[in-house]
Length: 263
Length: 244
Image (cartoon, rainbow over all chains, first blue to last red; front, side, top):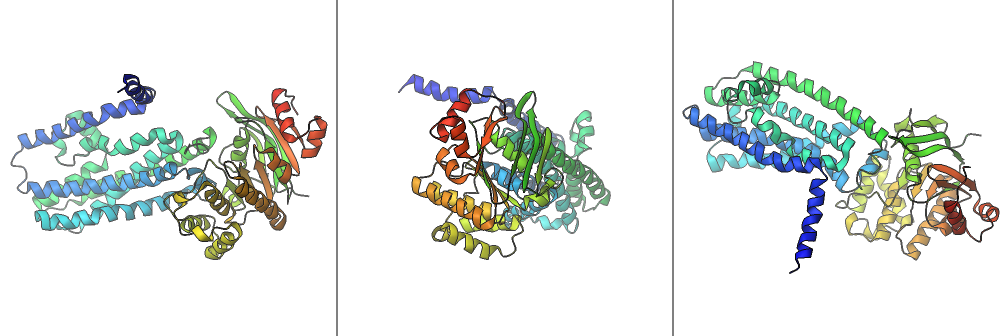
């Protein structure tokens, strides 16, 4: 055993971490988010233990919906990251492809990837737990659509960062959705959040989507105003996401990040 | 007469560092122009601006008389690029990669084009093999096939024979030579292999610190600088420079 070799390998990782703010933030970020999320979930169940008469159904359905959002966003980011990892990025941008074509092809491919992952999960919940997400009925389609739009919008935000800042932005790609999880009120109603966070949460379409899912499952009542609010916010954020992607592409052409992004 | 490529007063500044400084040159049809210079002299930056990957700070790149900054997408159909620093997705087979790029470049009969290129570049035996499993010589030929998938009028070659064994290197050089003559292609070749440049290029540009410091035919440059070969010229120019 050589202390120097052990110390040498430790230094290799230490130098990497200390020179990268995203990496340091990443180390702090995950435990903080987990504690906040599970803190609110615990608070909710200890305060309103009788809120759900079908706890398993509500939690599992919300988990599947959240996973759909997570998968759609990650799929979008993954398609972009794959090009960076395979050092194919420059090839792609010297091909005569418009930015709009790149976005549309990522949106379609991300949907297929998401469905491949999610359909089996939906199918096994029924035999394993006696629960079917299809109980949400027709509004389920709108909830999925809304979640998908928000997922690809987050994908656009993250891909814009990757375009502009390169692989250093990769950690953000993985953690972007977890940041929103506590504010998205996936497993608990918005009332459980402190006032200031409630105001922030209301600016996200997630609150309306998960509120609607719980409303259908708990009260058997469809409130289309929630679906409408989610769509309005989604269109707004999608528009910003597309603008940001175009802006990042222009900036990347100015700064030269398209040349050496895979290196 | 219209040159396929005209570079006019081209400059690129990054923050406060000038990577390319007011360079001018033209490439004729059927010409292979060599671009020589040490690492970091601005060759890749120049090629990136010619490909529309990088926005020039000043100046113009005209492809068939049209500004790349104004008609990037249309002009990219006529061009292609190969560099050892760029790879094709490793998990896709050679054929799958070529199909993908055939589609991206709008090639009409993509499978016929792949058959043609496979025969010319000796890819047939590993066409269905994953690209990541190929030797560096095979990968290089696949990258060349990708660069020719759209039958480009203009080709940018950045160190096309770097890290190849002598036999494969010679095969690639012979192929490029034939290609330029048969397809009347305009080629910009950036290389550190002086013998390769001497063999393939009618004219050579010498670059240093973002400037074009000399130009001419390989033989003229050798004579002008009183050296025995291009490598000696390269070394001389990179030890003492005068703006061209």
